[in-house]
Length: 583
Ligand code: DON
Image (cartoon, rainbow, N blue to C red; front, top):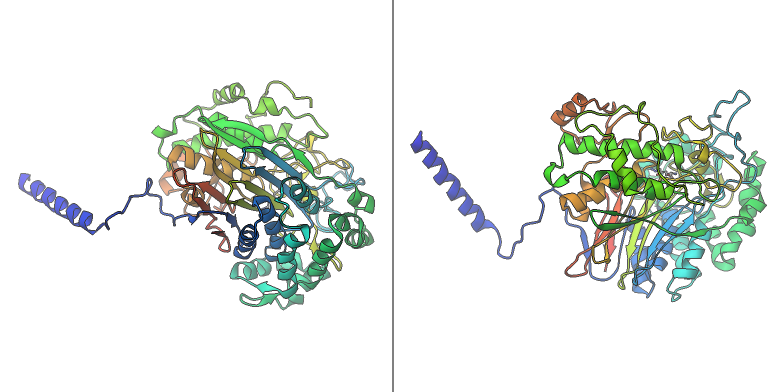
């Protein structure tokens, strides 16, 4: 016995020595061992987006003297061509900007409801939510007034470098649309996968399904109508989209088919600059999107709840971490349903929701061993009312200006309607309103009165473009994702992975995620994301696991390496076209 032990000890020592000798000199072990490729490193500027061609467009703009905002504008236009499921002219979104001097702002270019969109517009005469054409998801009545063009205009005027013009920033997108780009395997699969949806409207079928012949990987996909729209935008500026020929083409086509949008609605669209929401997590500042997104408030509420637990003593893959995270998600999403809406129209108790004392109160309702039931968890009572398929990309330039931008058509390919002759896919963002408060929307989300439809109102969003600062106030990392309500939880997971578990930005993005949104009361997890033992432990605690695991989000992030200032870019392995490109 003694002999064999000794023998094993000697053998182990010999193996260790051998392994040590095999490690190349100068090798520094990574700080954590999660299996991920290294982030893309760049000393100057970097773009992380879901599409390599678009990332390269952004880098080229920075090399020509543009700043992060210029690059972001060019990337946004390019994605409207190369990532048509979500990149857009016919949708809207949010751009968070942090300038090198630390000033931070949020550009809100979310769609606005047309004037004719009143509270019950999506209900039939029996009071039921209208499905299909005429409803808030597909067809000519589903679109809000698009905000992307006004959003880019506002960002450029106030925060661009003014070394590159509007026309120059649109040019790469126009060229990609005119000459075409090479269809990737991801795009070819995506188009085929959506063939039923994209076949519903002849113009959409003609463009995106090649009139039923489909585009295959490696083929060139040109969009001449969209190229002409870009050319008009270059020649006549952003007003052309809202008041000129493009506006008329959109409105003519929609109104011929019983749509809601008028020229007055188009003319009346305004992008707004908002004050970002700020919170802290273990002393690190979190800066994120305020209403009309629920993202920032729900994220900060969840982080505040989780701050009360010492994750240093809780294993990352343990049922305990999943349990506590799920309970924080359940409570914050219950509040989202009750309290959140467009603050230009309704009162939202933002200060109360992101208050640490309120989080402590919610935390005290969490049983450390047992799952709560969503039926019993109602929205809390935050203090003090104040008076008042999506894609994310992020850019950091050589000077340290940063952009974190999420924008969308809502559903993949929006409402499936291409406004005739424009090449523009129209959004179906009207479904982000509560068509009938209390009834689930496309994402199964229950939403309340504050998010009811009203003329000119902006539908509540979950998009969460976010910055996290180091304790000395410098930019640490940027993050954001698509995924409807799962967006907020994806951002939460990445932030806690970095802060609590010391992961780098790529590891934090790669790591399997979970999602809970209060109702339906189910814990969503990713394929291979939860070990069987952990699933059993969660079931034993009373959690309800979703029937079928599914991938969550398509997260892009940039982290600044503290010692060197090197930009570290990371895209999500869940979508294969993403690439961080830097110089
Ligand atoms: O604004 C929102 O929250 C939704 N329209 C986002 C939709 C989305 O992320 C779809 N992508 N997978």
